[in-house]
Image (cartoon, rainbow, N blue to C red; front, side, top):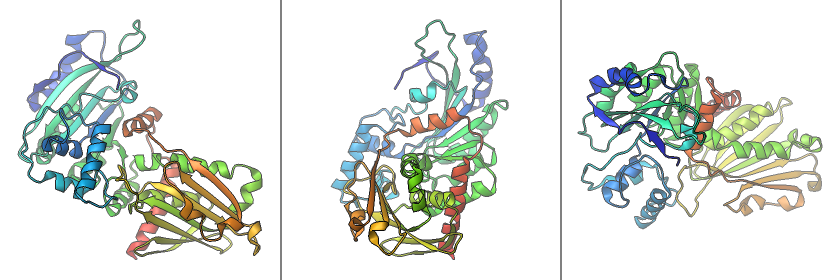
Length: 433
């Protein structure tokens, strides 16, 4: 993490004084620097896992809001030691509730909102506002403010500075007082982004506030129940709100690998004869797999027909323009290691049948670097032409992926993602019917 040049130590102020203080800040610091003309970034930063582990004494403070390697390792060990299912996500309610047992709610140094990755800071956000809800449900609102300048290797350049505001307290205090502060801190002439860096199940009234106030949204549909995540996407689609999803971003390597396989013209006919697709996922959170199958069906102009779900898999049927049916299956698999994000795609098998002679047919298998895909190779696939490819693991942090979205200046939903959402919602509604 690249260190930041803070013009002053973050100052705690009564929340009523924040707006007036910021208006005077640049005049007092540097009359020639009025701050970056870029964007405002607001971050919902609960860091529940880190807060719980610090309160339990399992990791040392201070609380920073960063998902460090130590936090991941300690949380995974706790899951295994406590006998929780190995499919338990590091963000699951089951894990957090167990960690919350017998905690003391002591005050620990909390630095959320004061440090952020260089990938974000180099974009020179004009204003960084962090909402930092606390585990302690009787924690009144506290507000901190400071100016910062990203350190530059070019000493001759005038630093492009911004300011940061941290709003800390329990969720109720943030709802009743913190959101009013945000109203006062908005910079009308600059675009505003909200990164909801937590579960979509939590604090729906706060999330709804941001939807209604027109921020460009960055969410992660791997965090939260599939039912809630799809309802949020449906709400945003109906409201014509711009949305970016880190769960979709993490699917990029799979989409690109699949597209590369069929890039040679000689392989294009395979696409016209696809009969079956199997997608293996880690755990039972199926949103990312829904995105992938929806993207495929959109690119090939298939229409959704029906969906069935049992304990072992989800079966989805599509139809080509010529009336031929395509059977697809999403298969949850338990892995031997707790996951940061549930439901990540780990394997894909695509079967294309041109004739009754198996030798003329094709089986395409994609597998991620860290998981064997022998299951997908079973069932007589060896008699077909076999095309296999390893999909590179994505080790990018959420902060890095967010910085790419911010840097794109995308003020609308990606057309590819928007089309995938539309089909995923058709499948979701098929469950309800």
